[in-house]
Image (cartoon, helix red, strand yellow):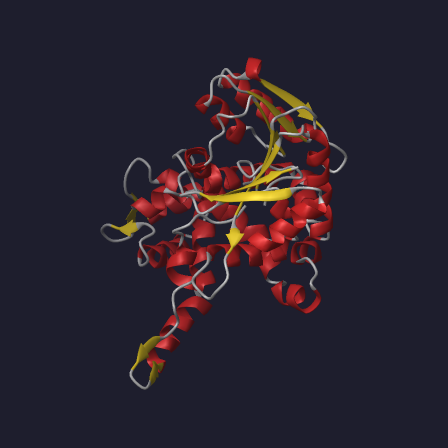
Length: 369
């Protein structure tokens, strides 16, 4: 989920490769043996998948309470943790004991807990912190997934049904939750920028527009990698203010112009490349085509439109992108195959020139006029 234009470095969309979803929910549910499948193993694996929300909800509560932050100074007893979080000591112990059994926290002595490498990721101030992600996924997104059956029956949007408004409007109208959402997406997708820059050569461009660029981290990474380049960050007014502060802090104000606006109406003209990272996956085909058409009108004859997205592969192999697509079904967007992107771009007067995979699991789709 990117933006409205909420960033997905304020919103760049989904879970990282190598997540618990890859390790647990995507594993094969049965062990093949001569003459068929091992039903006992199959049943155990299936139960593990069915009960996966037990772990995610437990992590959510620990993240909401800020337990990892309280343990940064070393092990502490449950009574101390309960007093500082206004929690019930007995219930908190049961929560942490269960999490310790899957490697999130570690019980050291009776009723004392310490951080583990997994638990450190729930600390607020570590690089790539997942605390905000755990909070958003465990609260609003968890509730919306409860209406997945409605999505599959009707093709409708579960988040809309659950909260009475679409996802981006909700996080705009609830600014405190919106800040947590943006922090969540930064923590999840901040690691995509360097692999993207390693895989795709931006050096041919003198100017790049980051359309729906959120807090500016993606564009800042590009400009830092290519000192001779200038940039335009295009965002809604409320989101653009955060980008202005970040770019000033990084000393990039002179090389980057911030333009406020709505990409459904128009985008700033005259740039060599129009980058959209996890933007198009937020929208159905009609809205996505409208955004792409505006980029097509804005770019010059030699311009490029660059989409950074997961590209869904065919076949039955484990696929993070297919699960992310289900996530987007819940909140109102969709992931696409290469052929679906090709048709979408053609509808906007663009041609898919190539698809460049990256080490982060996303691809850069390069389109020309």
